[in-house]
Length: 391
Ligand code: CAA
Image 1 (cartoon, protein in one colour):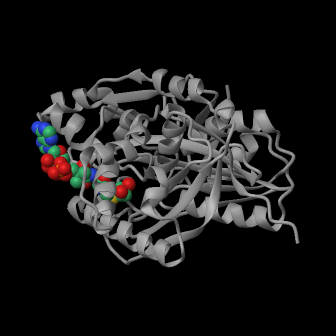
Image 2 (image 1 turned 90 degrees about the vertical axis):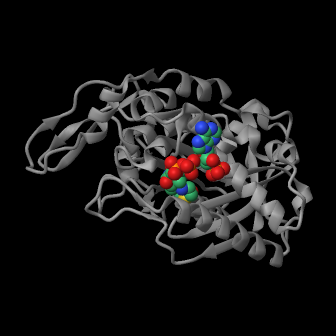
């Protein structure tokens, strides 16, 4: 029997919001030392959605260039991973399917498990492609991270969407087996259905994340995974970028290594360039980290990259990917930088107004102000239905 074709990430594109709040502005408002944000948690700005943006508009914005480059003929499945969805029943991906004009012969579904579900989507997609290598799966991970105003979590908000085309003979990253997986029932971070902001025990969440690093690595090595030294870089879920440093330091200690800070920075430093400006994009954050690594590293062709996906609650997965020779010609570096650079910086009052904004629940017509300059916008809510448009 011929060897199965490698499966992995054939294309990756991300989008973020119209607005940004800098941590210098946040610090000036709440009296924190800005060094706590810049050096302490490694964040410089956070993306803030305009009134007419949400996970759907960001997702369509991220996925449109992927569909434009590859066409939609082979896409029979769209998996939308999010923990900030817009409906309890309808998958947000159905709106994206419509906005992008994807074929009706497609299945669309939404996945949830905190920040982890983008990786679940990737693995489920790999399984579908394994069954039929002619098919491609559009995986979208999109989130708006929102904590209560004035809370410790406020500095770790953000928003972004990543779209990945998963297929056989991928152009960017081959996803390897095995995976190391880990689940523990922990209330470190959660959002009940009746709240619009997340609840979190900050310290508990960091230790739960580190526990998951150990758990996934144990399972990964027991299943015959690569050794630590085989990896050229590590992409970690980044609720704030210094978390990637904490996680890698913890992995080295767990493996009995002496922690050399220069080595930690070498392993994770390039993965944080975009997340430091975008903030926490939950499901998307790990793959925004991958985009930053591929855009900024010297040639990684044939090199192994480690991925640690963590979702509070908690579920985590460690897996490896091999960067495909020739990948640099397929990167979207200029577009990625533009997505971050095009944002308008807003002041604290404007940010607070947007944070507190919500649609009335009366079933009336509630148009949104025309704010975004992006290609897709949330036009409003009418008769309890969200209305979207292409600009
Ligand atoms: N100069 C330099 N560094 C400073 C400083 C200064 N003036 N002041 C403080 N710092 C450092 C602190 O030493 C600390 O660093 P270490 O952790 O390395 O010691 C860092 O800045 C943060 O300071 P605090 O711990 O005092 O900050 P805080 O109490 O305000 O809370 C937080 C930080 C817990 C991350 C909080 O923002 C939070 O709860 N965020 C949301 C939860 C979260 O992101 N958890 C991460 C793991 S869970 C996960 O990954 C899932 C997910 O996406 C949510």
